[in-house]
Length: 134
Image 1 (cartoon, one colour):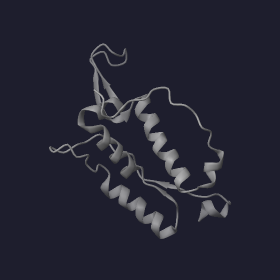
Image 2: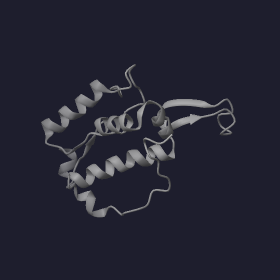
Image 3: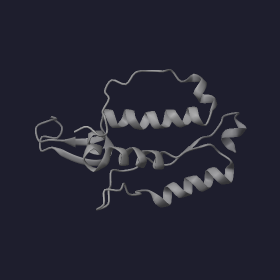
Image 4: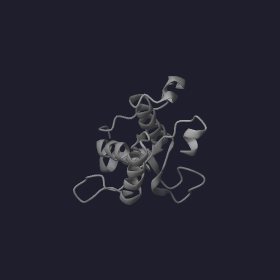
């Protein structure tokens, strides 16, 4: 209500999914309790919700177990000076992953017809990846 009292429109976002798959290759929920709390607050306060938890899980599922690594900081030894021994990070995105998550948020801003949608500028993505390629 504080946000609305300043004539601003609040928007709630659930957390972005981490890269975690079960033995059958299904993307797993990684923020169940927190995401459900955000959904409940959105329902109770009639606040628009961008469910990034669900949409990012769906994107990870689309990419699959191996190809989803293309979205995260998976670096081979010697590939990056900050990680000479390599890195396998299932939480933090690389540039491509960050752009794909941003695209999910932008799509929901438009789908929800938020006032912010009128101020979005259409840009181009520097890199594209086919989730099925590899």
